[in-house]
Figure (tube, rainbow, N blue to C red):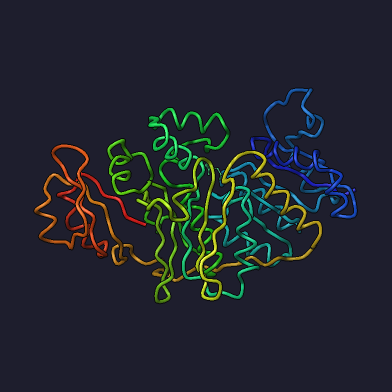
Length: 395
Ligand code: HSE
């Protein structure tokens, strides 16, 4: 009997236990031995009718010191206790798998280096894209490619909110509440709506494919709290939708990384990805463009990715060697040097028209106009922002 431990009995932790219970037979066929959760670490009280009630413990050292436990799933979230526990487990020679994007994005460099030194795995398939296989495909299946660009809808909660705003004219607060009720949102929803969660995810993907740490504080990050019904009307007028897009692009050995709401033409791959679904477009020099699509959040989809990592560790008791190193300080380029087309809402169009090349003008409300620019440098955009009501980049 193979035994594993789960740290955290929240949405994802209970999902991991459920998948291991429900799929016990097929897991045992795949592994050649049965697998069960021996411990679930959590401080909260669990009802005695809960199927995992007997396994709940508050004693981390019991897990750390149990030689029967070779794989631990850290699904507690945060970067304090989770960091301390993960470090101790890796140092003790145990494999750790996680859905904790905050920890991977902030401490991944150090934790991967400990895992390498101890010849164990630190796997994080569930940290990006929920149930979508993306980490392993990027690292293994696309290994032949030089990856130039990753563009994705990486946060299910904000995609759910934006979809409701477009489809049903829902207001922001109601849509957010629904996402929370469905178990998609972070404990502090600011992490979702302010783009922090998507920032962590694009930082993880960029660090993985470019081999150097992309620090979140260097990523230009704008959330969706400023998106209004008028923005939705402008996007509709341009036959487009608005999506929160994370992008990492390699240009001349530097990477431009951003998270921001973008205006995306209907009919293009990311425009039709709605609700809690995520979509990640990867551009490689051999494969061209490939798109990964699936449920980006939620109990069982995320648990599916965590349990896949557990299986990987149980099947291959060796270091998978996901790895990146610290980067030079200017590896993440200043976004002001990047190019793009923008929709600029303004009450002073002449001030902007005399400075920037304009491709299209759209009007949806009295007293202002929307100007769509040709390709310009972000620095040029910044110069006209005093005359703008708001702006959004086009995809
Ligand atoms: N809050 C996250 C999201 C959960 O909405 O995408 C999955 O990482």
